[in-house]
Amino acid sequence: MHPLKPAKAVLKNIRQETADVKTYTVQVDGAFSRELSPGQFNMVGYPGVGEAPISFSSLWEDGCIGHTVRSVGAVTAFIDKLAEGDELLLRGPYGKGWPMDIAKGRDLLLVAGGLGLAPLRPVIREVLQSRDSFGTVSLLCGARNEKNLLFTDEYEAWRKKISLFLTVDEAVTGEPWGHSVGLITGLLDRVKPDTAGTCAFVVGPEIMMRFVCRGLMLRGMQPADIFVSLERRMKCGVAQCGHCQHAGFFVCRDGPVFPYAQVTGLMDGML
Ligand SMILES: Cc1cc2nc3c(=O)[nH]c(=O)nc-3n(C[C@H](O)[C@H](O)[C@H](O)COP(=O)(O)OP(=O)(O)OC[C@H]3O[C@@H](n4cnc5c(N)ncnc54)[C@H](O)[C@@H]3O)c2cc1C
Ligand code: FES
Image (tube, rainbow, N blue to C red; front, side, top):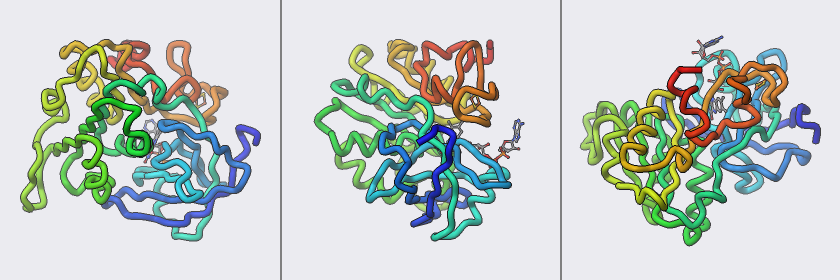
């Protein structure tokens, strides 16, 4: 299939995750690539509305793929109004995802802030399916408050095979909150990464990623063992328009997942 040709997708299931986030399980027409990797994204859109880059939150499960979307602007607000049975157009899969080959055989530390849990969900699914291929796997997950946590009905299954640590900036529901309150960096001491044998995947707001990466390096991890997923405004998704270009690389083509060592300056606002 031509990389710019959109595929037609039918919304088979829509699940409300939080007040402004929904997960769309979509069936894509037969020409769409079977070769999807955790951390890659689609350009998702509709004629006359526009397109937005959206990560895969699930890959080919029961013949469908998943996108988890927060309604923030023109395209995502349009998607938010769709119902099961409606159609969307998808272009992709684009970009380089999480380096699962590097993580295999090592301990894996996953750090997700807010909606960042969406692009890590396919990693978690792969770990659960091939649990023996990884060492210790820990997931640190932060959200503004309990109401903003994603995929909460899956945590019990995840906990059977990986360690899950949760934190919120503020507990608001009045229900007992048996987890941490505070910044996600506060959870780093709970996992104590084995510095030589651990690989870390970090995704969330850029300031959160910056502090988590620094925290990991202070604990002895090397920047080459830490991977981050960058978000930049995108138009084409295929390294043609220049919207996402920075210092000789394109976030859409060369990322969105990069070794922290490669983008340290960019994330520190120096480029
Ligand atoms: C690789 C990648 C993966 C992503 N994955 C997901 C995902 O899985 N789920 C998800 O919900 N989102 C994801 N995003 C983010 C999503 O693509 C953006 O939020 C996108 O802008 C939404 O499009 P929109 O048309 O709905 O909103 P827009 O109209 O683009 O507005 C989005 C926000 O940006 C502001 N904005 C608009 N124009 C500009 C401008 N020129 N400069 C600065 N700010 C501006 C708006 O005020 C608004 O707050 C991802 C982004 C990338 C790059
Ligand atoms: S989005 Fe066009 S160059 Fe990356």
